[in-house]
Length: 110
Image 1 (cartoon, rainbow, N blue to C red):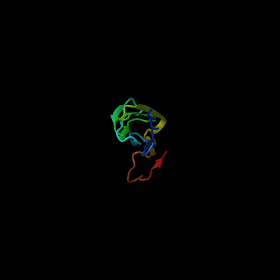
Image 2 (cartoon, one colour; image 1 turned 120 degrees about the vertical axis):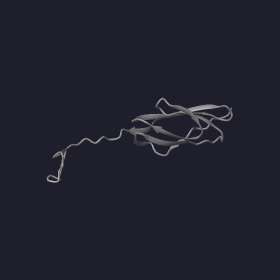
Image 3 (tube, rainbow, N blue to C red; image 1 turned 90 degrees about the horizontal axis):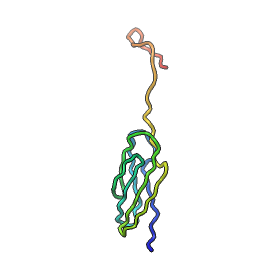
Image 4 (cartoon, rainbow, N blue to C red; image 1 turned 90 degrees about the vertical axis):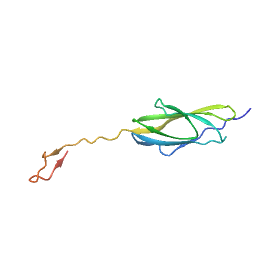
């Protein structure tokens, strides 16, 4: 019986602000796999051993790779909580006086 190799992936980065682009690479030891990628966002796409994906919103996401090797064997693995995307910070401050003028050119922020 043929052994299925362990699936190994690398990501160029796993943490950032939305929208967040990640390049994920699957180590293909067979030289001809087809990969069904599931990015944990409801998006699934078929591709090869390297794919770029943009996470449009914040959250923590699992990544699943379902691999069909050239000999027809199917293997899947999920990497739990692999990607963490944070929301873009929103500035929340005020200043006085409003409006600034040439007579009052200095502001106090809070």
